[in-house]
Image (cartoon, rainbow, N blue to C red; front, top):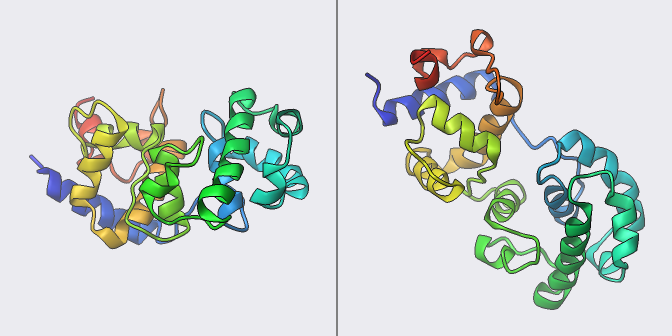
Length: 212
């Protein structure tokens, strides 16, 4: 019977060898663009977000231009994503907050980032991790599901519990890339309805595979 520490060790060894490069599939050129993309990506595919963002950034290249936009202008450009009304409100608030609270400069601290409208802990962790390479573990639906299935987490009831269990065992320098390993694994292999266990290189130490 594998203990949790050994399971994490095997996971890190596997991905370090088989996926040494793992990064976000969202397209962006600067921290502002990434934050917009991450806000848009809630309950929406990265593929859809990457279709929306080029014309969006052409019209609103920075937080200053976005802060001056009307709700209708923002909505019109993002209406093909999920919850566009709410996201338009959050994007407007985020741009204004970034200017008013941080003089337009993206903060690197997770708690500071969460002061911005529309920025929850998961989004803040993504920015801290991807932009500033901080040991912040963003937990989305893929990370939550995959961590529980593999056996990295046990009886986790919410994303924060999952985050705490993951950062306890993953070395700090591996946390930024481990976030992407788990997301991409959940997106393409350990999918929600019918996980592709036959294609999975983690099955030898996966709790879900062992129980099925």
